[in-house]
Length: 401
Image 1 (cartoon, rainbow, N blue to C red):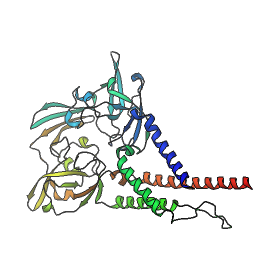
Image 2: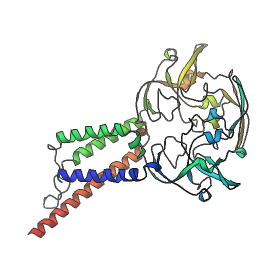
Image 3: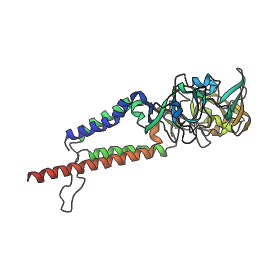
Image 4: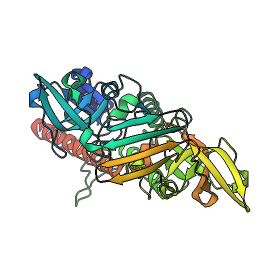
């Protein structure tokens, strides 16, 4: 293939990707959390369209996924803002699980597929600086009015949202790749196929080896990331702006006595908080098999063992584990905040200390199947293009003769 052919193919691919972005620009939203897993993932690009409120479907499994203007609609009706650590006008993408018509206006009850709590369902019974009582009751869920709904999700493009969010980084990588290609592509040539007589079945490929090598290196690096327990992905913004969602952090083990106040540490599991009465439902996205990345705010030595108090730098909680369950039943939770209830983690709960980070590429660690499918697809596309190119050339020669 000639260089002009490569340029044409690249132009077509870019056009296919950018066309829906241009056409549906005002109706595009990027998923930035894990609350809608496994239906929507961080980095998915969703297309939203208007829908008559009466036609919006409700249901835990098949309800429409909607864009909510912001958490203020729940807070205005009594939802406790301490558990909605989002500024006003921050769009929320959740599923409609119930609806009702009141005086000609539709109202909707929503929930994230991956959330244990119905949106806005925690209310304060009594609240003060040092002690508060909160209640979660599924039967008292907050229904938001139809004017709080911006639209209904009709389509998603997996991970394409990263093109918008990390466009500059991706552009730099592409530029470097193109420069390297220009430098060495003229020296590298391979023949992809030969027939039984040894005749060339395809035109010499100047890019296939480079392209394949590049993606094999990417795949190899991803396997290393997946297997290395000292390299972890930041899964939320509780440590923002020090650590942001999808940063890749590098941790090292450290003697407990050398861990300093202010260090960001890897906490083995939230079970240490749950065992002391912290309501697991408040950290529904953190099962016992997961880890936490938070900062050390205090430490103490008891009988030769170190204990640590931690906190998320951007967390709505003052310190980790300061809430306790008072009573609990199906669909109902009564819990208290007590400033004197401070949980210190034992030193064995600390896996390591964060020593560095690589911005943006944390999603790469946890999306191996997606990367592998992209690589295989691109390889197949290259082979098809080259075989098609050969057949076109063959037809031209036969016609000429």
